[in-house]
Amino acid sequence: MSKTVTTNVRNDDQMAMLHLFEFDMYTLAGSFDETLRFTDHDVFVYDGSNEYTPLNITFDRLSEDFTMSSDTINVAIDNINEELSALAMAKEWRNNRAKISRVLITPPSETVDGQSYDYSISENSSVAYPRLEIASLTKDTYVLFEGVIDTFSTTTQTFTAQLTTKFTYWQKPYPSRTYSQNEFTSIVNAISEVIYWGRQKTV
Amino acid sequence: MRNCFTETISYLDQKFDLPQVWGKWTWSDLETFVKHQSKFLARKDHYAFFASFCKPVKNAQADDVILWDRGVGVCINQFFYWTYDHTEAAVVTRKIEQDATIMRLYNE
Image (tube, rainbow over all chains, first blue to last red; front, side, top):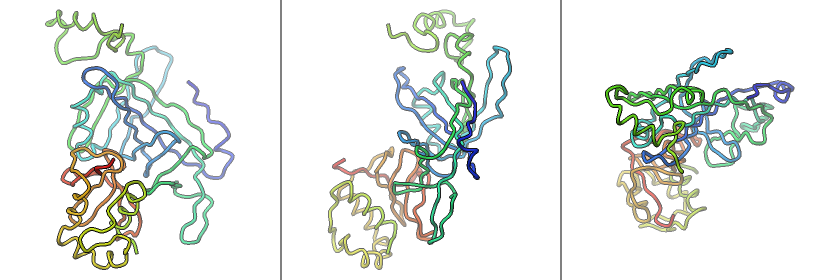
C-alpha cells in the first residue's frame, strides 16, 4: 500500500486534510448488509459515488514496524443518539472490514455575500445541504489503515471499536467470543468446521 | 421568504407529487404561508399535513420527512437530516433525535 503524497496538492497554496472511514456491516445470519461511511470533516463528504456522514470520530496514533505482529487501533465514534449502538446490537460488526483513508485536498473556491475567496471552508455542495464534493478537486488519497473490527464497547455518548490488521486472520481462525475455548470445545469445533478465515464457508 | 417548511416542501415537490392545497394552505403562496407559520405550528397542522400523504416509520432513510413541534426537515440518511435554520438563515444538518417523528411518502 502506497502512502506517497504526490505534488498535486502541494503545488497549491492551501491544503486541507480529512479522513474517510468505512465499516462493513453483516446481518447476524452472515450475509453482507451495508457499508457505514463516516468522516471527521465538518460537513458531508461525497467522493463521486459514496457519501460520508460527518461525525465526531477520533482514532489512535498509527505506528508501523517490520514485525509481523498484529497492530491495533482504537476508534471512538459519536453514538448519534444511540443509533450506532442500536445498529451494532442488531447486526454484526465484528470481524468485518474497517478502512481509514486520508484525503489531502486543495479547498474549492467559494463566494460569500458577493466576496470571492480562492479557498473556502471546504463546501461546494450540489445538493440541498452542505456537502464537500471531492471528486473534481485536486487531491491525494491514501489508505491509512485497513483491517477488521475486533471488539467494540458503547456508552450512550460514544461508540468505541478496536480495529486489528488483516494479519489477525493468520492467528485467529474464528471470531472472538465470550466463552472459554477450553470449556466449550464442542462449540469451538463446530465453529471451526464452518468458519474459514473469519467468514462462513459458502461452498 | 424562506423557512423550514418552504424549503422542505419545495425540495420534496421536485421529487414527488405533493398536494398543492391542504385545508386553507396553498404552498405556492409562500409569502402568506411564512407570514402565518406560527398559527400553523401552534395547531400542529404540520403533523396533519404530512400525515395526509406520509406514513410514520421508525427508522429514517433518505428523503423521509422529520417533524418536531417547531419545524420540519428532510432526512439525509438514518443518522442525519437537513433543515432551514431560522436563526442562522441557512440550511444546516443535524443528528436525528430519538423522539422526533419520521414519516415516509406513500408514493416513494
